[in-house]
Image (cartoon, rainbow, N blue to C red):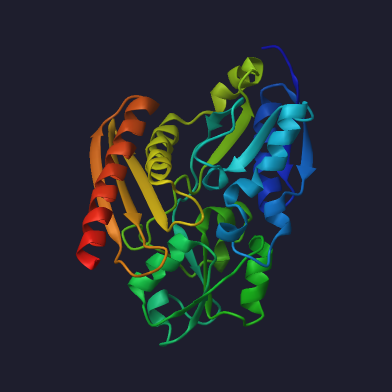
Length: 308
């Protein structure tokens, strides 16, 4: 194999750097020379407002895309759940790697599980998806915004600002913080976000050389699952302003996907849908996700009519 010199664009949070270093090590093992280009994104800078009010998760990838466009970097490593469902023209998701634990984690100093919280306890999260699902599980709780990187969120918990917080299990495990996890949520109760726990690598579409290099890092079962999940979100117009969950699992060639929609205003109850089918490629997985999204849309329309 021909050796290449590659630059990875990455956010500078501890978790993002871990992810980039992970990809760097794999590429170096393949014989390539790899450097990191650390960048601070607008999503990292704006911490006093929710993402849904300042432009969504695309704020975490825009600066990295500029680096790709200008040739300062050859690839960008993202937490896939932070990657918008529609990439700008000229950019492609070239690789999805094997998924870590996709579940949400309960983190608390005093309470072993969500069920142990007293009435009116304060739980921190800035994910509208988690807010909607937490309210469905425990309508008595006070859900308060929690922004910042992983270390910042844990610090705020340790300072006593919250009785517990909900974080992605994958991030805690990747940073060696699994001991902070008091419990993990069953996906049936707290359905994960589309792409949660997976790493995605973005490149310029015309960088055929880089795309070819990355093919050996692709984990096909994860790619199929997240293709279905992201299709649900894309059809539903999924963004930080919509409480939406989508989670797919692959057994053999049978892909099963579940999705949950929450009303951003909190008026309508949660709407759920699921489907399963045999899939062998991303196109078939995408079609299955679109089918589930249409189920959700139909149910949302029925609920809206019933409420009017």
